[in-house]
Each structure stands twice: as C-alpha cells, then as structure tokens.
Length: 284
Image (cartoon, rainbow, N blue to C red; front, side, top):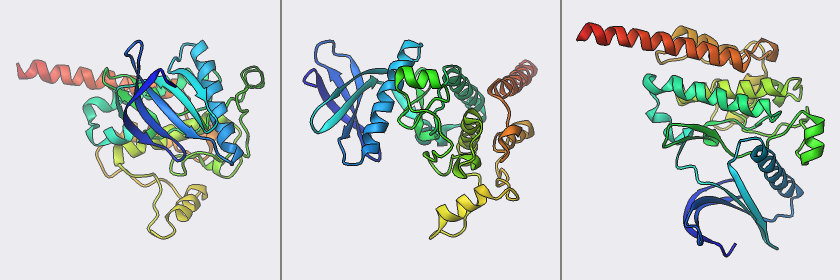
C-alpha cells in the first residue's frame, strides 16, 4: 500500500470507503476501496467474491479491476479511476436528448456481463457510472454471482442461489424477494427496468404512503401480482413506457431479452433522429 497516495475520499459504502489514490511511481490515478476486516464472515465472502469476479472479468475484456492487498485489519481493492458520475447523481441531468443513448449503453453493458455468465445482482443507479467520455460502466460486483457451475468452481465465484435475496429492495425482482428465482438473468432485467423507471421518474415503481413502514409496504406491493407499477407522470414515448412495464413484469417469463430491449431502443432512437433531421431541414 505504500505505493499509493490518498488524494481524496470519493464515497462511502455500507462497510467500505472509496478513495481517489495516485500511484507514486507512475502518477496514474486509481480508485481504492478500503474494507475493514469484520467478525461477520459475510464481509470476507463478499470481498473475496468481488476480487475473484474482478480477476475473471479482466481475463475476458472487462478490465475495471486492477489489484488488491490484504493487511491484518483491512482489504484494499484497486480499480481503474472512472472519472465521471454515478447515475443516481446524474439523474437530474437526464433528458430526452441523452436518455436513449444512456439506456442502450446500460443494456449493452449488462449484455456483456451476461455473455460472460455473470449476474450483477445489484443493478441500481448508484452502481452505474457515466464517464466523462460518455461511456457507461457497471461497478460494485460484491453481490454478483454466476449460474455456471464450471465458472464458479474454476474462479471461486459464488454460485447463483434461489435463496439469495441480496440487493437493494427498490430494484430487486419479485421472484428474488420471494426466493423463487428461476432465471437469474431475467432478475437482472427487472432491476434494469426498475433503474430505467427511477432515472425517468426520480422515484420507485411501487407506491408506499406509509413513511414509518415504507419498506414493508413497498415489498408487499412488489410481491402482490395484482398491484402494478405507478403510471409515468412525465411525458415519455408510449413505446418506451410499454417496454419498461414489460421489463417490470412480475412474471419473469414475460420480460424481454436484452437483445429485444436494445433493438427496441435503437429503433426508437433512429426514428427520433430522422424526425429531428427533418425538422432541422425544414427550419433552414
């Protein structure tokens, strides 16, 4: 750890602190995640899992993870410094002009992970970076898993499990919360749809008016097959609205594939660009 100089604090997690650090030899900037060793064995399991997924993804072209160090008191994970903003912070700046590009990139990035047999398991705006170059990248893989037994055994990555309900409750799929997950990839698609919804509405898909029992009521509404997501109160194209509702379908078998999501968004973007071009020509 002596090779790195802490520049500033970038943020905090439930059990971690993230710093901007500089390599004293190369002067390159990196992100460093500092995690205290804890009596809770789950912290060790999650941290080891995040390291092993980082190593596996690096070998397959998803090269965000750099290195790690372990001391008697802490784990230190080194990542590329992704200069930009997470989508939770960026949300107020999302407009019709940039929304579709961001949404398409999110689906494409998730498709890359799924093609490598990795289920992110904690998709939410806070775990998606929009970098200064306009590119999207997923971060925070400590809860991620693989449904592939061979990959799990070879890389010591946690195997997907129907009893696993980890994740953020406002983005978790109904079947995952009810411990009925049959298609772990489709559970990620639900979380992606919930993230789309949150980025448009600055709110969550289900209503909960009881502030004292907000989480409990929200999870009840999530689980009840007769309760549907709140309608959009901002203008968005009907086709996009229908796509997001389909992604949020409580029956995972009815959710679209990532190919279908990307195709739908791309077609709409193409139509929108053609319309804008015609308007531009008319104005001149």
